[in-house]
Image 1 (cartoon, one colour):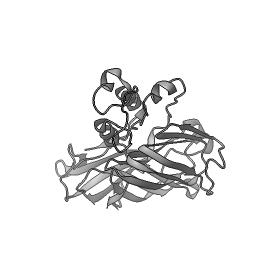
Image 2 (tube, helix red, strand yellow):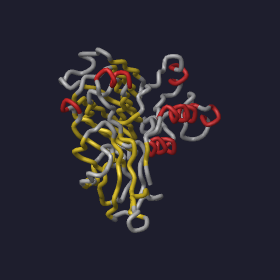
Image 3 (tube, rainbow, N blue to C red):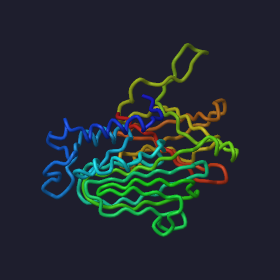
Image 4 (tube, rainbow, N blue to C red):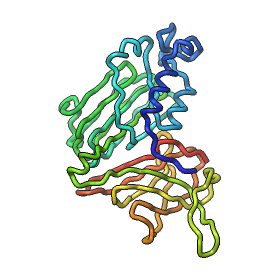
Length: 301
């Protein structure tokens, strides 16, 4: 089943509405608008796990609003416009966590957006490629701070590997997304690097007229299946990995040389994992920049 780029701006208002609707606020598990209590017996923010799971499955953001916080922030809150993911990590198993995440930023990116949220967020720090935190060098950085969330926007981020460190307890989300403005790309003479599509395929058709066609469903767990990927920018991927909802590597795609294919299309094969997964691509772009892209929605075998 193919997975394609999604505009997360369409999903964000829906999740915001669902998480703040007065009609839903009185149901068990809702904490916004303000209600008492807004926390469970362990002191963690009470959330609706159904909508957290929906965000995790689609690659959207789940907003960890503290009681009364959304109403107080409504006139100040800005939704980032960057929507294509570099990193997506979600965890719902609970307990204490510490997440250290590298975020490769290439020179085609004009805006970097980060979302970090948890049922209890104890620490969040963002470091530039030179090792300095954005607290030490805040140039081009806007931070929206909430009790259980940080939303960061970086304009014209310098190429290199940025790093996030966050810790806390309970479920959490960490997402990094990018925007590549067309005018900037034209000025630099570059093409955008976008992971457009990934699908499992099979060979069909009459002899002499055969072709690869996308499967309607994800193949069964444990089977080896051919797959096709569309990656723009004229770049060569170095690694195509299957990753869990938390971003851990659980499989590899072995690319096959296909000289007759368009430059943006790649064919390979992989062993279908036994859990939902995303596809993550890393490689080298113009000027030897490291790039990384990941599909938004989870594929479920």
